[in-house]
Length: 403
View (tube, rainbow, N blue to C red):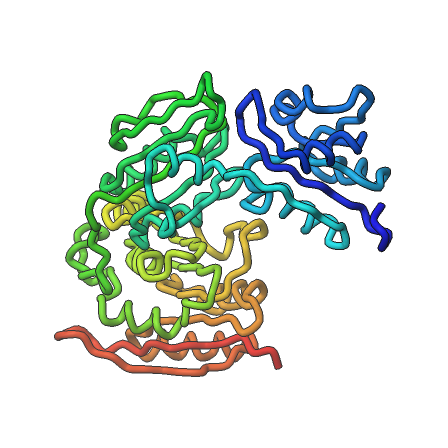
């Protein structure tokens, strides 16, 4: 144990080379210790360097059990992939044992190695990890149109072919995929450069990673004309007009929000526009009409906005208990249940959360004002806007005050 009484970790980065080179300093660290840890692959690679008598702690889920085993030791040498501070195990130690002392001996991370093999400058590379993580950050990088995206994969859901399928589903065929397999393994390492359609259905050895390089820019408009959307039964009046849509999005103040709910999404135009302009958002959209499911899916595909989760059914009866709590909500339709909807939203809306509603009549305006008063919300802003020869619309913003 270190002098200050904390557990001490030596975290050594390695690649897939079965004949690792370790500096004299690292060899000294290994030879002077008896407790080691890492994944099964790390154990296999490092075993020939370990002393005759040693203890090995496998890093397997649940990690809680791993860290309980660590508590029984003073000093531990951990083998990790690449740079342990690059989405690596040193980060995990810091999170689980913030008081631990950590000394890191980094190697090149796998994306650096792939860039080296491709002789590809990577100082401008946008990096996303899909290793046991959701699609959110990857979707964000695509919508933003990052020119060079480095992706850490896994061997279950986020494999290269699945990534290519998702990209093509939403129209992102404007990238080339470079795939590195078993990087560092001199006998088995393989580098492939493929168009997206060539990746579909192919199996790649794991561990692998990839770099996406953009071939051309994709249009990302600020304000999508309503005529470009798939419409509900072709009814142009059933979609939020572009100027109104941009106004309500500005009132929702989504730049610093994380979770957005769209209640009564109809065609999904507000959700799609929100995802287009604020791709970091988690978006959950609710609609009573069964046709909405296909509409929002088609519109999301048309405009390249993956990551919108939709629900069909009466919102007041929908189970929302497992969803992340909203920071902002747009009510696009209420079906005569305004108070019930606002009540349900108020119960889960984060402090200082925002609800915006578009009123097309005095009746709907009054229903909203009564509902927010009944549920302790405060009307912060109301703006009237008229588009072409359509009726004037009141865009109203209510907040959930901390007071």
